[in-house]
Amino acid sequence: MQNYTIILTKKQEVAEGTYKYIFAKPVGFSFSAGQYAMLEIIEPTVTDDRPSFRSLSLSSAPHEDHLAFIMRHSDSGFKQSLHALKEGEQVIMKGPLGHMQFPEDERKSVVFLAAGVGITPVRSMLLEAQHKNSKRELTLFYSNRQPSSAACLQEVTTFDIENYTCINTMTRSTDSWDGHVGKINARFLSEFIKDFQKPLFYVIGTTAFVNAMKEILKEKNVDKSNILIDNFG
Image 1 (cartoon, helix red, strand yellow):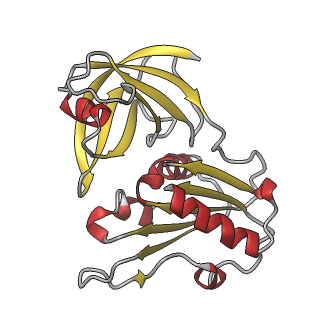
Image 2: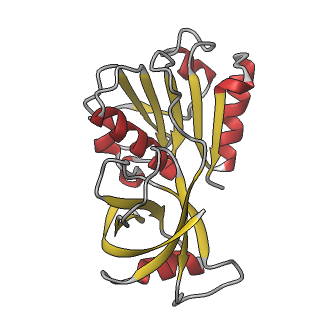
């Protein structure tokens, strides 16, 4: 696993309390869509009892000339220190790591079950699919509390991919949302998935979300070899 020093070029709010951190892509660094890297703050401005590094999924795609990470802000030392960085300042990156990648066979369909900032690796993979004009059947189920907290909501809804379907749902009813409302459950998935044995399922989100999705897929007799998990804690 190689170490790189990367330079912050921009940060922007992509949802309520959620930020995208954009870094210059170092020479020689390559990765597969869906992978992650470890970021370490060189001189943290805030410390706590946790290490000054985190594993973060890459939200940018391999063909892009920058690296991007999406993170929901909190009072942790790492997150505060990362957020305090100014443009031109550096962090240490180690990687790439992770197995959350597309299968080689384009005939293998993929279903993403994502919640909150679990959209991060999905964004990378969909950007890459769009870039390569993929013909793979892709379906995204994206769950959030409300539209204002949904990172990349507009972007993932409008990707120009031939066989792509995006189904968004909010767990809290709001006047600003006229789409699906409620948690992802077996009945909801069954409205859109006719054959649960066919796709490869990528489950990305909090521990509670991941466990709930695993139970649904178990109920639907999905083979464990067709389930990849990325637990965002």
